[in-house]
Length: 246
Image (tube, rainbow, N blue to C red; front, side, top):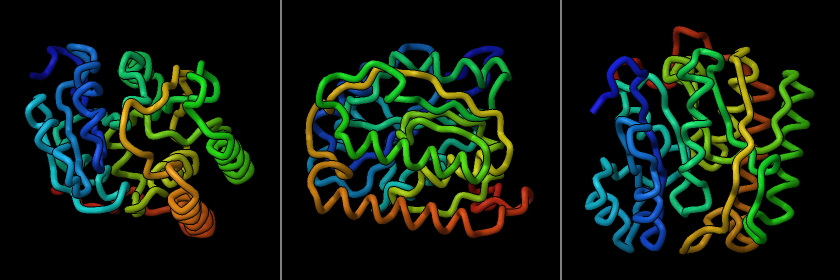
């Protein structure tokens, strides 16, 4: 139910075999902060979809691809004014959602992104190469567009109309860095919010779980960075998905 007088907020949570953590993640979302929770599932075979639906989330079978899941979630939340994104594994602390949303609700920012590296991290929550990758991406984006990021985690919130105007294309793990690059290039008002970060509450990381997944995700992220850096900015009136779908 929409909160009277407040922007309508949707929270999109991409999932793939997160049955051990999804119920706890959904239970921790603060009451009255979001109007719609969308779990966009990439083909779980462990009961993730059923658990999420039982917990009251709107569940989509989005198909494989992290970016595809995020995009399908945005399409489902077509009535929202603000879209937030969060991982399902319990590492992101939903208690920080109000702090992430506040700059947007107050009209002081278009895009707010959580920074795990600027906040307090539970021991073992982030591998060294994740920290290094975030810093490297931040250095590259600053060199290109003058915007300094310290992280590229999933936990973030953006005005829906601003997101539509970015012309997002990436359907893989490059989605996060594409959004950050396009937001910087578009001149959006961007803020970083330091957050606490925990170890995942169950399951296996699809990005840092082993050397193979790390290399696959890293390749997608690097190729996305190069594609966006060398490409033209999309016309503001031509979003990646037609307005009547998004």
